[in-house]
Picture 1 (spheres, rainbow, N blue to C red):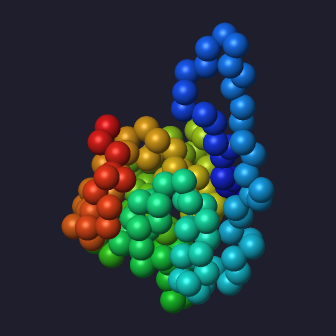
Picture 2 (cartoon, helix red, strand yellow):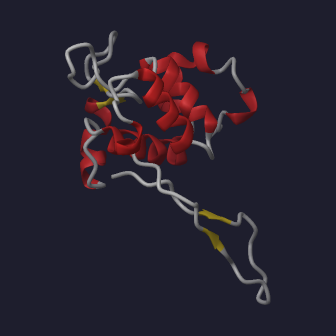
Length: 146
């Protein structure tokens, strides 16, 4: 189950300053957004899960049109690259082993978005550059340039 992480202060603490962690008032879990076969529910889930990084919700809209499942109820595969999976279109060839090392199954929507968050924190928006013509028009200042 993916959980929205706590938000910490980006400042470097001085010896007299205490670092505080802010706990969010709720956990963002897909089970609270049923049915997930409805893209509108998936969109609500993504907007809440990625509230701290809204570009990721926009990327999901461009990558999968906010769908984690296809019409047959199977996990969505990429239209261009069949190895891309789920709402964030995580490519199995490049990311399956790393996701598994983290204990994540990208076929599960909670794990799919958790791995996408991990990727974004490591690489910025680079893994989704193939759809950048769609999502880059939203807010260029949100695109991490790592």
